[in-house]
Length: 117
Image 1 (cartoon, rainbow, N blue to C red):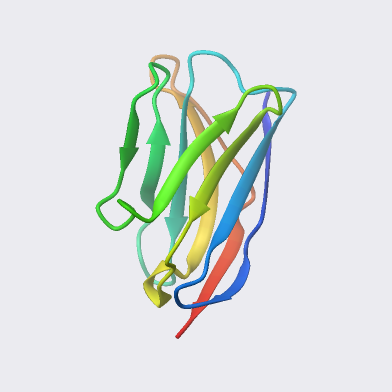
Image 2 (image 1 turned 135 degrees about the vertical axis):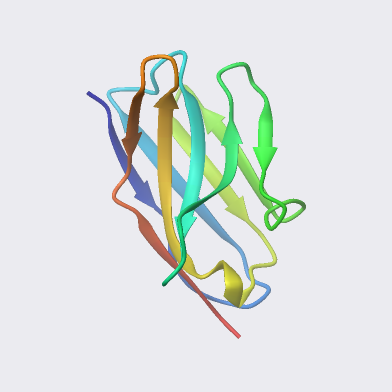
């Protein structure tokens, strides 16, 4: 069992930056893909950024050039650096790790990001 705890959300003005953190306990398990997902009010959840187990980085079109996902295994933490934030980025952001082959996944509790215009 893995617990994920997110932090770093908040209220920011348009054009501002935030860094989200997701700490895994007891650790980030091996052979899992890592991702940040978000869900805006009235919309379906979407994957914003991910790192595959093989080290491939993927970004949604809305995140390219503005968001950066990274991992620090020594700290068991996954980050999402978000720059040039826009009101459309307002959503609850979730840390998500998953193993497709074992059909096992874990979510954090979510952190609210609100971008004012």
